[in-house]
Length: 97
Image 1 (cartoon, rainbow, N blue to C red):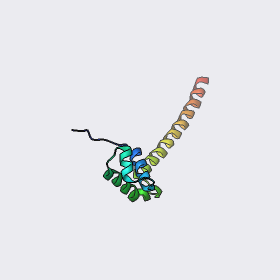
Image 2 (image 1 turned 90 degrees about the horizontal axis):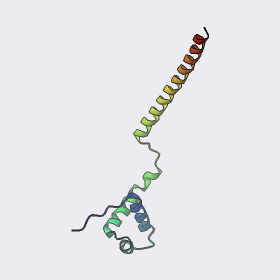
Image 3 (image 1 turned 180 degrees about the vertical axis):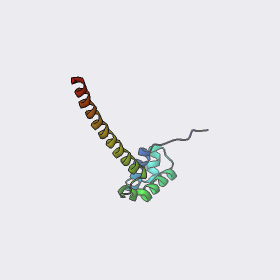
Image 4 (image 1 turned 60 degrees about the horizontal axis):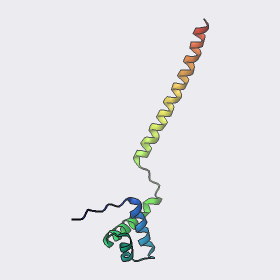
């Protein structure tokens, strides 16, 4: 029994794009790359259906969470820097006494 092949996303996208271009038939691509024609058709169909998502401006909720977290961390760093400078000056004042 043969092992099931696994293809990475880059390979699938490249092959689907070649199928969309139409310079070679799906049968030719299948023979050249050793992939079943139905798989190529499926990848081509998926790429055409989801191509619009490349140009959408919707943001993933996780991106907004990360932006908020980054902003909060920068504020904490700023506050810690202010506290550190304050403590340094107080230390110098105490040292001079």
